[in-house]
Length: 470
View (cartoon, rainbow, N blue to C red):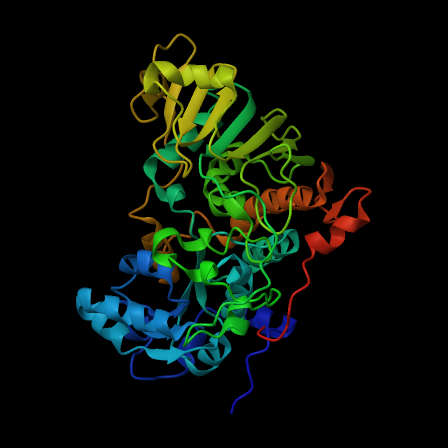
């Protein structure tokens, strides 16, 4: 049996600079690059690393490529994704015959024709699988949340800055016209200086709880140890995976060993627009408030308000960015009142920029932006407001989020939301989680990856990883 692929510095650097490694072998489906520029059908050979609920949701966006290999630690997930393939014509027929793996390392060793991988395995796995695929010379699309620690966010940011391979993070809202138009409007100064940004979603968990150490029977076909992967192996509970097609990562993502709750799940979307539009970079400070009388245990709280403070940058002044979740999540009352004439109540999710000249509101994905300038009676769309017509279009528009990545894999324009940016956006969220776990505000030294004066934060910043499956 061949040895597993080891992600050494040498192999990673080699992989980052070699996009066409798959062309060295010639299995039954040729790499797209081997067909020539005038080929009637230029399709990528793709592998799926994880086949669960999120993979099934995004499958239609790449099913018309050649999905030649699939991998999952739960055999039932592979069975389910292949059953779905019956609905998808020629692409589905190829997927139905795709070779099956439990171990991603064996897939990357054996499948030399694979040119690109789609990763949707859960927050604890995303950086590790993405690194392995890049080291093997594969283009990578990875679902959010990108990272499960500050150190992972920095690692994937640095890799993203050097790779010549096409990378894309699954923050789909960033590939809509209204997201990019909101960026253009903000960067053109139409709101003036922005002092506050409030991001929220009114989802809630039960109060923070301790891990239940009484194990349920492990379902047939599930390699639970491998599922836990780089994290600790906790006793299996049905609720980690139960109902996965209904609420996906909200099952396991509540538990801080495996995920980082609503901040990671929806914050990955909501913090995207502020980070991009205001060129935020790393924060100076982070703090969090949770409900009084709810001690933090092993799971994410029932409600949170995170705050990050940023220094002045380029033409932007200092700004405070907030994330709110829980049943009463929303902006402060004074800003909420600005929305009443249009919406009658605070939307269930949103990103609200409070500027000198007015406000801009989108949903939590950064989509559907509306503006209310001083003197306006109601909010109007970023593409419709007369006062914004003079703002030039400076950002490219796309045919879709996954299509942008597929085109980049085939030599087209670079992706808009690559791993370099994904790692940069993940850093503040993971710094916020450090503050949550410590139970106190922190001053952040991004260059050193340190919470100033808090050596006890280091194990949270650099989570210890189990090496068994890496």
